[in-house]
Image (cartoon, rainbow, N blue to C red; front, side, top):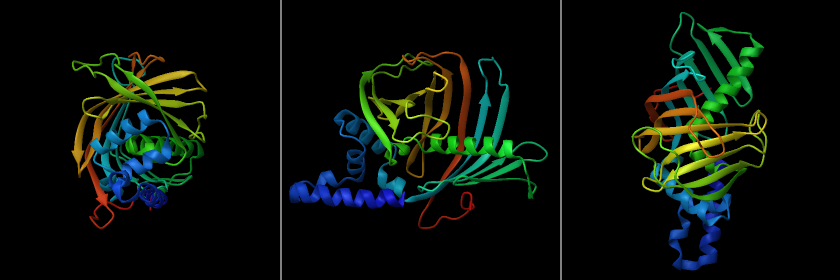
Length: 283
């Protein structure tokens, strides 16, 4: 994130030099960063509006880490959950990956600390040596961090943004989403376990300018998954979708069988200039 701040500063200076004194609005940090990510004007406008409605880049940049309670239920198409997991999470918001996951249930809850690619497992303060479990928790920790940090992940280096026009997704629940600006997200380098052929279509509400849903495609398994966001709530000046339902889907964003539900509560962002309390994530 510090590298991102330096890039934003350089972009703002360049815009001011090219535009002269008559272009102060072009120095908005969100606009400057989105202009670095894509030349697609439709994607620029939609993502800039999304990030502004989510709290604004200056508020986001002022945060160091986040903590929250996380409840995950895996259905896999069944009417009742096959698996339920309740945890406390601490995540770094900088470029470096630091994650702490702490189980809240069970007689011997597992604690996971992830620093970059290094993962450490422990129960009741004693180290756990289980390479298979470590590999799973490494992938899981990176996934939950990516999901929580979205839509701010759209500002990361190596992200490619392309407008897919305006679409009205199929209704989920009682309130229709309405027309959405769709922005396709691709990657210069594959995410862990993925491919550069993978993509995410982010559906941004034309009314609220917040994320309504995200259609994801994984080329290795030729599978589509639809994540429907709801209960958007403000925490410390930033909006978070506190309920995200994942469904099997297709290229048209159809709503198939329910796969999983993730819920976030007691969200607290910790500013860079203080506000201690939670331990630094993964440190």
